[in-house]
Length: 123
Image 1: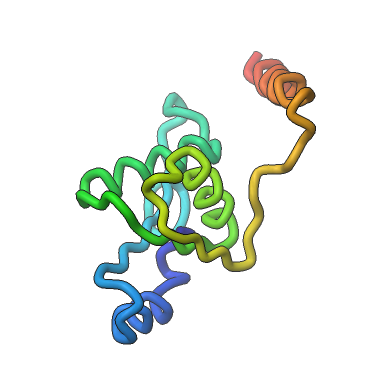
Image 2 (image 1 turned 180 degrees about the vertical axis):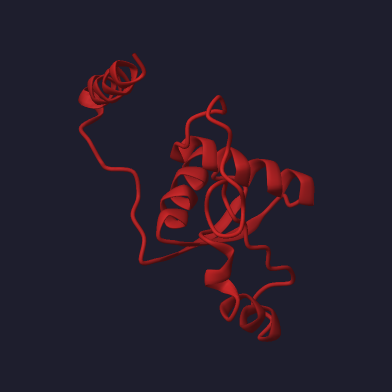
């Protein structure tokens, strides 16, 4: 998961070596060759990107698979695997980041602060 062009060499190499029967590279909205979402569309959060992975894998009929994520795609892969652990056989994370770890007791406070900042900018 990242800009799909990041995998133009890696994807075919994985398939040729028998590491994967199918290799699908996603371009999230506004990344790679995909168009940007309209201003009234859902916000571009990692959870929204995880939804796109769920949507794509459901359409492909994949019940179990390996996720390979690069950069932001690594963060999306971690989030997806946490939400649907029964679907993810393994994760490969390249030059990535994951959602910032916080103390569980402070999570709601940080989410609210982030949302409040965004709400103020919408006025």
